[in-house]
Image (tube, rainbow, N blue to C red; front, side, top):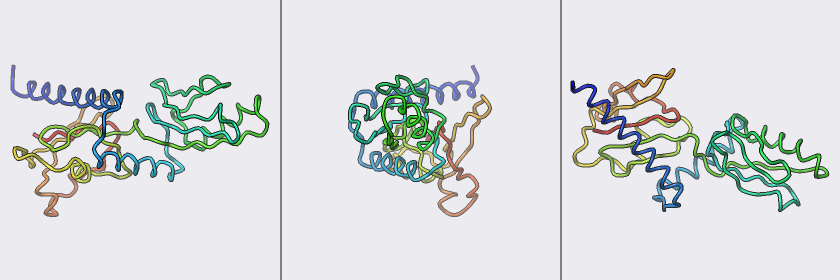
Length: 210
């Protein structure tokens, strides 16, 4: 087997391992580093301040119905994009903004509640994450902040290990069903050279530090 396919398989296993570890940590309620927790708070705040934020699977939402504590609750968006609420059963949430979901729940509740007043707040963004792996101090899944770049994501991961090859960092991204690789030279970018390498990240991006 040639070296190129071997490298591709190694990167694939690294990505899968990072995603699995993040899922296990979430499911097990593992303690998060303070930096990650702050990023998640900032991401949720940005989502609530952005009227165009689109809810996605695994996001956590707080649904509050005024004077209806039995209906109000914090719910996760299921993989099928729906949430479950008393009286309404399944409600489509993924693909909607919080305001659109709020309007939809309000309309559905009118059959059961007089003049329902509904508030939808994004508590945690789990649908938009990036993955940082390899020779970094804090590998794992990180919330994607608005306009976050590769350099900002690397900073959030606590810098590099002593063995890191910072001139050959790779960004793995799926575009039109195919994986593309972009290269990032940390030393060049921090020196103000070839700054076009410092791409704005997209949900699901993986940064590999060899």
